[in-house]
Amino acid sequence: MTSGLWHRMDLAARQLTPSLLTLALVILNAVPLHVPGLSRIAPLLPLMAIYHWAIFRPRLLPAWVVFLVGLLQDVLGGTPVGVNALVFLAVYGAVLSQKRFFMGKSFAILWLGFALIAAGAMAISWAAVSLLSVGLVEPRTVVFQYLLTLGLFPAVAWLFMHWQRAFLRQV
Amino acid sequence: MREGPSSFNRLAQPIKTLAQRFAYLGLVVTAVGLMILGKVDQLLIDGFRANVTDAVAPILDAVSRPVESVSRAVDHVREIGRLQAENAQLRDNEARLLQWQAAARKLEAENKMLRDLLNFVPGREPSFITARVIADTGGAFAHSLILNAGARDGVTRGEAAVTGDGLVGRVDSVGAHSARIILITDLNSRIPVLVGPNRTRAIVAGNNSDQPRLIHLPPGESVAPGDRVVTSGHGGVFPAGLPIGQVATVNDNGISVQPLVDRSRLEYLRVLDYGLGGIVRVPESDRAHLDDRKAGIGKGARPRTP
Image (cartoon, rainbow over all chains, first blue to last red; front, side, top):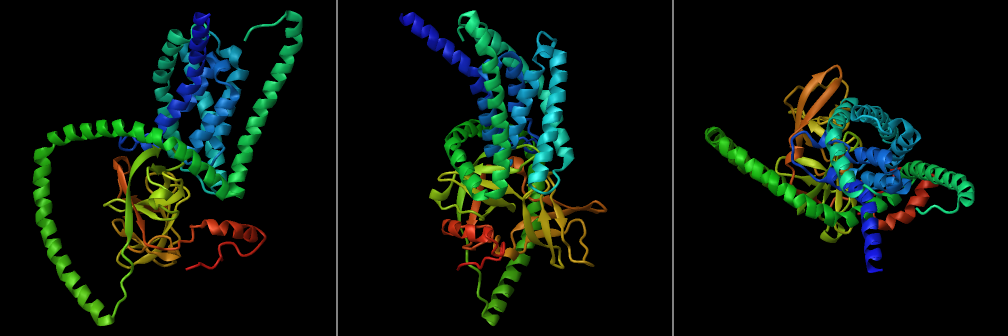
C-alpha cells in the first residue's frame, strides 16, 4: 500500500515538472545577468517552454497554468498586465489546434513551427504594448529579441526533450 | 486519467472538450479584460503588481546573488588582463582630473561667495536608500528593474533612482519590500530635461531602445551631439540637475540620447528622497479622490498638497 502511495506521489511530482519548469524560466528570465546589451533583447524563455509542452504534454500544462505564467511574466517584466497572458494563451491555442501537424515531425519542422508561432506572438505583443502605451515600440529591438529567442530555442528544446525522456516517459 | 466505461466516455468526452474550450476562451477574455482594467484603474493593477512582486522577491533575491558572484568573478578575470593598459589610462585621467578639481574648487568658492552675497536658500539635501537590483526584466516591450527595498524601507512612488553615473529611472510601484523602477529608456518614461550650455528645455522620451529620444524642443532651438542632458526639475517629479546622458545623434529621424548609466552593470541603486510631492505620486489618501477625478474634475489639475 505504501509503495502505491509512493508511486502516486512520485507520479504527481513528475507531472508537475512541466508547469514548474515553465515558471522557473519566467524567474530566470528576470534575473539580471550583467551581460552588456542582453537585457533589452533578452530571449523570451517561457514562450519556448509553452510551445514545447503544448506539443508534447499539453495535459501537464493546462491552459490556466499558461495564463498564470503569462501573468507572472507581465508582473515581473513590467509589460501591461494581461499582454503576455494573452500571448501565451494564443501560442498554446495555436499549437493545440495544429497538434496533429506537429506529432512525430523532425526537429527542423518543430523549429520552423516555433519560428512562425513566435513571430505571431511577437507581433501580438508589439501591437498590444504599442496600443496600450499609446506609442510605438521600437520594432528593431523586437526583431532582435525574436532572433535571439529563435536561436536559443534548440538549446531549451534539447533540455526539455531530455527531461521528458528521463522523467515523463510514462506520464 | 482513468477511462470509464466506453458508453459513458462517448457522452463525457464532447462535454469535456466543450468545457475546456470554454475555459480557454474565458482565460483569453480575462487576459484582455485585465489589459483594459490596467488602463481604467491603474492603481488596482499597480497594487496587484506590487503584491505579486513582493511574493516573488525573495526567490529573485536568492537567484540573483550567485549570478552576481559569477559575473563579478568574470569581470575580475577580465580586469586582470587589462590591468596595465587601464593603469596607464588612469594615470592620464588623474592628471586631467586634478586640473578639473582645481577648477571645481575655485568655482565652489566663488559659488559659495555669490550665494552668501544673494542670501540664496539652498535646496533640501536628499536622503537616500541603497538597494540591490534583484531583477532586470529584459525584453523589447518594457524596461524595468526590481529592487529589494520597498515601502518598509522608506521607498515611495515617484522617487528618482540613480547610480554614481547618473539617473537610472523612477520608482513606479512599491510593495512592502520590493519596488519597481521604470528605466529612462522605457516607453512610458518622459522626463523634462535641460540640454547643453544653453539649457534648452526638452523632454527625454523612452522608446524601449537603448537610446531614448529628445522631443518637444522649443522652436528655433538646436542641440548638438555631445551636449549634456540633465533633469530640469520641471513637473516636480525629479530634482533638477541629475545627469542623464549626452546627445548622441541629431538627424532627420530625431535626436537620440546616450544614457550615462550602463544598464548591464547595475547592481546597486540609490533611491533619492528629495521630499518632492511629484505629480506621479498618488498617496493612499487620494484613492478616494480618484472617483471625483473620474467624475470629470480636471485630470492632472489636482492641487498639490504640501
